[in-house]
Length: 458
Image (cartoon, rainbow, N blue to C red; front, side, top):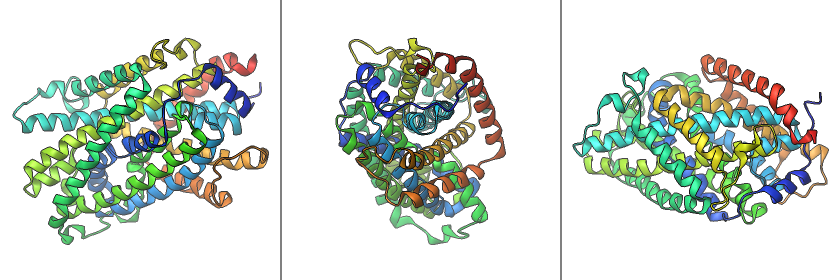
């Protein structure tokens, strides 16, 4: 049994050309996909939770720490995405560089990242929608807007938005990208409205103490809000549907990351400057902060923008999730029936529907804190292996054409591994236990199904 057998890049490209998806996306679409996925829950939801519980005003440093880790990983991603423009992101890269069993583990973790991450975002969307309706005099029953752990029956708004976006993704990638563009414009407007209204109200006294939980709190906060940065990975999953992937993928990955990191730091600084960090432990901290300083209308506008923004995050995460499942199925590691492409819409409709229903159930029944932490550890693990994959291919296949080359790869790739591993170590031990349990289930599935049905056996 050869668990570390690899797929050649030429075979990956051949399969993608024969059984691939329609190429409809350009560089602008990819940048907006990245912004659509990165700017959302991280600003509108997790910033307040991480500040209140872990970092205090030092949440600004948490975003810097997470951002640096992502920059290193993004440069590695950009090189591999341009070399191997095939759906699957880190899963596909690992298959080419590190072997099938490693690729399976990465793919299994990406399933965790996108499925559970989508559920966390859906929960945040629900909180903002319920708050906006409440401001308009419409009070939804607690039993239908809260998960059982919070005293409810089911988070129905979260279930609704997931099923609606599932329908949209089945209809087509081009249509989904158009909706994403409109919603990204709305949410960026919401971010700038918040900054314009709140900056004059910043009270520097709220930044003291700056590190109430010490630097360990900053590190833990960075590990928690790392969830906010996984959008550039979603850009890589769109490789197979990009018209000029060699040029456009690096632009989409790096461009969206730089823009969003600057916005994150600015919002974190202003948010903790206008209200004490201890008051931010809620599901809508940005809207809450504006209400606290007397901008009720501004709060409603930001809440509306937040809903649009979180919708784009959810849309892109669910898109990435379906593409990971699709390529794993196409490679034989999952049942081939789920990789069917719709004859009219050109989308992997079967797995999109299956995954959408699963996300709807998770978001309707599980609490957001648990969900976000599980997403982070899966993402960080994938980043570590992708960065290792860049180094391996530089030594094993130096002859391969590289439309984009990671600068100073002998320094950048190890820094990506070290920084992402450091953030993993700072996650709660309960998260590690759940992650290891999930990985063990994945190994079992691979040994008893994936290995036997792999295309490499044919």
